[in-house]
Amino acid sequence: MGVQKQTLSAGNGVDFPKKNDTVTMEYTGWLYDASKPDNKGTQPREHTSLKIDYDEFLARFGLQIARDLSTSILRFDSSVGKGNFDTKIGQGRVIKGWDEGIIGTTSAEGMSLGEKATLTISSDYGYGATGFPGAIPPGADLIFDVQLIAINGKRA
Image (cartoon, rainbow, N blue to C red; front, side, top):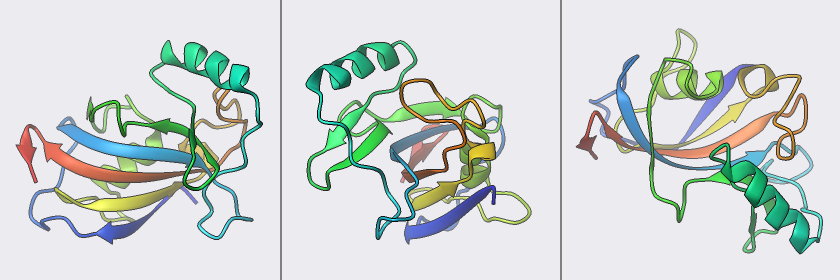
């Protein structure tokens, strides 16, 4: 599947990031679950110590496990409440599904400045057969709600 983009709110339609641009984003990520109406997440296990252990482990890798109390689903990562996420795009610094979902490919249009979209990413464009121990199981498909806030410092 690669990456599929569903626009939630349009961007300016003029400014699109290119390879090596620095992008600023706000995002939340879930494990894909076809049994849920919005395909987002699974019910977390009810162990506070597990959450703390995950937070301590994943903090070393820039990830955070958090329970979304409004929907009772497991988010494996989010920039919400932590500040926006800045990265150079198209350099392999993020998963392939983000590079292609944000810049675009021949089969998918990229995001424009200010756009908010849902990226559905197959495991081969995410963390693959190994997953990310403690957070993302092997072969997991992912869903991200992403908003493109700035490109090279230019804000929406």
